[in-house]
Length: 512
Image (tube, rainbow, N blue to C red; front, top):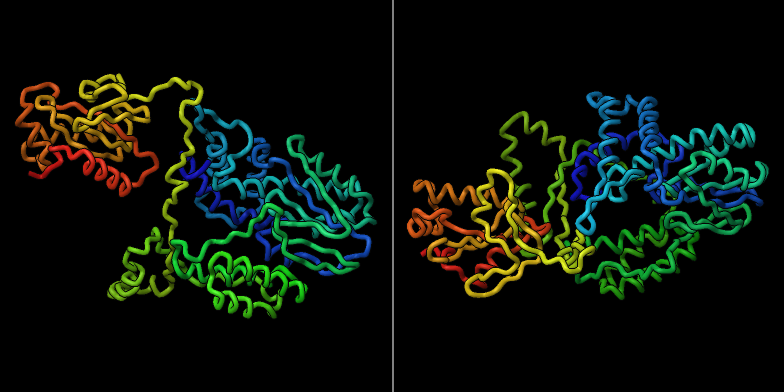
């Protein structure tokens, strides 16, 4: 269901299309500020604080229920969606995402038959629509079982963030067990687990506290929270590191409603940030800014930027030049076109930094090897497909000599494997060349053949050498893919190729 999944882009598109429908769900809670803005400040003395969780929601939603829910919300709010996306197209798109969630383990491919993948883009919006659809039935059932007043109250005071629900239950509507029974009768595959308290309960990152008839709020942190923030000396953009104390102090001021308790939490935050190497003055300035701020004001959503926003995304590297400044300085060139001048006058350009791969992401993989057979030895084999020209050129085995040094491969590869670093060997003198390709090996070798056979296309020294040295031999060269560049970008693969060239120094990579 993640970025490597075949349905990732379709899932992202469906999520973009359906997101406006999720906001039409009566119980919808967007985030912590939205929850705090909806939370009542006063309650009755005998009211109960109630939270509710749906057990394993994503993996328990039947496909037919989910598609029915999407259709229901489309029929109610189709005017909010782009006209060129019909109901049938959207339903089919969602169905493709749901029914094609596959994963590999122990060299076997599995498919998920029920529920939605945890990592797919569509999942949160999809789950919101499904529970929103069931909540319509919940409101009607509450009307029927507990009375119209109870039904109206629940309709206006039931809040939900994905599978986490919150409400304040009034005892005059009867026991909470009756309401819990209604929830658990909505669908046999979904189980609601309820907690209640007359004192305090956590919801999201907020501890909701009931003191008599008043509601106050405090920060909620799990016992396992180590409060280890991003170290100040880490390799991240300067504005990101400087913004962290500001954003954390603002969060404390927004959530903690009691002023004296707020100062206690801000001082705790200061201690945690100083441990992470943040400058004392930067932390003090952030705390000073929010220690007396009004919580209600901070909970008001910020207005969205006017016009279109164009984001310049780059992978963060302190050694790279500031291309963003170059782009801004070059923008006046677009004013020469009246049409572009009009477009850019309504467009704001912002910059964003993408995190490069860290050691964990470089060293780990979501793909598991053949754990079912501990004796399995990875090797290079022919694909044996009809008309494959590489089968006669490929060298089979799991160990290969490169410049007289043995190299043992770690992944299964064949003629059609993509993203590999390979060793090309002249079939007469056995001199070698190291190359790489992001596409299938077959395609790259077809290019080598073309350069060897067509003199006008010869650019690389290896093509000239094999054409002269192995003239008349069939095949003129042999190939051994020895390194599979898993999840590497083109740039990373080129760096790895150069590493092997520098290590083995094959003669045919020389320009001489």
